[in-house]
Length: 477
Ligand code: GLN
Image 1: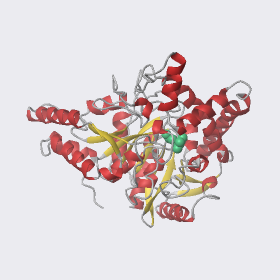
Image 2: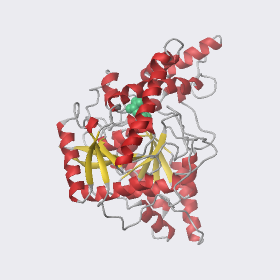
Image 3: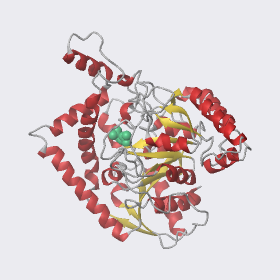
Image 4: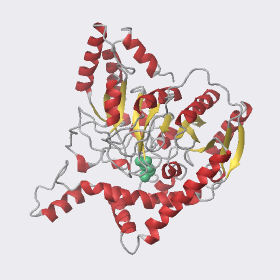
């Protein structure tokens, strides 16, 4: 289905020259959101502020003033970004009623270039999940089959892009939450190098793996957005310097000759659905015939990555969720007789099952007596994994594999089986633990359901990865 949106650079160019009005773009986005409300991709719109900003941009254009590189371009933010114009709840009841007193750095950067946030997208509460079924608001439906999940946790963002509600959306990826929904719903999902995009003003999940990135229709759009949002930020001390060459892609980067790409052996074996495997193998064949050199690469600690992630992530979650105590944000316990009752009442009724599960696991693996056996051990294996990726990247320029072992599963299929749900992340968590950039590209369909191809590069090689992804996208479409 053809999109109603042009590339983000073209949309902005048309607004800059007065050919299109920012107001028209915003109305188009809002109309599509309203028309496709039954997919539950959007929690709330920020329409008043969006219209105000669009009018201001159109007025600037009329006066001949310079407007930004994303002038008038509508976008949707996952509801764990602090954004003016609506509540930020991260789809959790405990944040109901919370309106942000400041905006996330990424939103500020996008707004400075004229982009306009039109809505907040659904997610698994606090980004804990792989299907949006952990959302306290509703479950988003897959755009290709409404009986299936869109993936998660950025399932609302991915579905919104595929449903054409806006030209791009923002997501967060702590263990796969941009790439896996991009794969399940059928769009491009980019997870940058850890630290390349500021996390200031985004609800924290696991601080040592959280990253922010775009979900788009094309790699070119993803690169264009990255070029605007990637930067050092004094409000996030983990941010790194951007590539002096930037991230926007030039037109003449079409040769795959001489690129050495390693297929990750551990991702191609047991547990991978035959349909996904066939599509990945087909993509590999196309890369080969376009001149890429493909070799098999083994990362022996990879089978332990999921276990490592499900120790480190809950440990960090249990700490980050400590701040939601019913005193400062959103949901409170008004009947409490003392402070203990206030804490327990607010947390007991405000958090959902998955947040509680992670708080308990995290507290357990960090507690004295268990710390050495779980948390310390997990950190040791994490270091080993980082070394294995470094070794692999001495031999190959990029790594390749599936994004997830299956296509989108049925709503309800894994909802009561957390371990089965966690298995959906088996091919995405390593990039988060290691900090490398990774992208999910639409590679084909099994029946109606999209399948993503995952490409990874060494830390800070985001520009090279986006370039490779663009070349690959041209082969796959
Ligand atoms: N599905 C993974 C989890 O539940 C990843 C979540 C994420 O990246 N936010 O932890």
